[in-house]
Length: 220
Image (cartoon, rainbow, N blue to C red; front, side, top):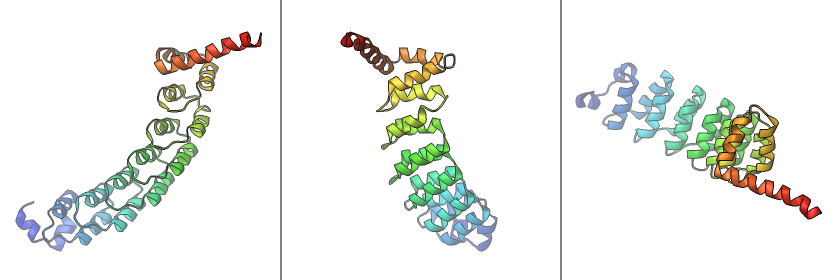
C-alpha cells in the first residue's frame, strides 16, 4: 500500500482491503480510524488479525478486542493476546480457555502470562485429565502442587509421563512411581529400562533398595 493511500483512507478502504493491509495501515497511523479498523476485523471474525491489531496498533480498544476473541473461541490467539497485549483480563481469559477445554493453551498461559492463577490452572488441567500437559506444568510452571499433581499422574497408564516427571519434577514419589511402572509389566518395560539409565531415577532407586535391604537387618 502506498503512502498516499494511507493518508487518504476512505470508507471503502476498510470494507474492501485485505486484513493484512488494515493492520499495516493501523501501524502507520496516518489518518487511520482505529475504531473503524477494529470493527471491520471483528466483523470479519478473524482472530489472528484482531490479535495483531492489539499487539501493534498505537490505539486499540482492548475490551472490544478481548470480547471478540472470546466470542470467536480461538484458544491460540486468546493465549497470545494474554501474553502480548498491554491490557488483558487474564482471569476471564483463563476461564475462557478452561471453557474451551484447551489444556495446551492453559499450560502455555501458565508459562507466559503475568498474574496467572496457578491454582485455577492446575484444577483445570486435572479436571481435563490431560496427563501430558499436567506433566509439563509440573516441569515448567513457577508454582505447582506436586503432591496433588502426583496423585493425578499416578492414576494414568501413560507411563512415559510418569517416567519423565521423575526426571524433571522438583518433588516426586519415586517408590510409588516405580510400583506403577512395575504394575504394567510389558508396557512399563521401556520406561523401567530408561529409569535405570537416568541419573536421578537411578539414584532414587538405589536409595529405595538400600532402605529396603536395611530394614530386615535392623529388625533382626
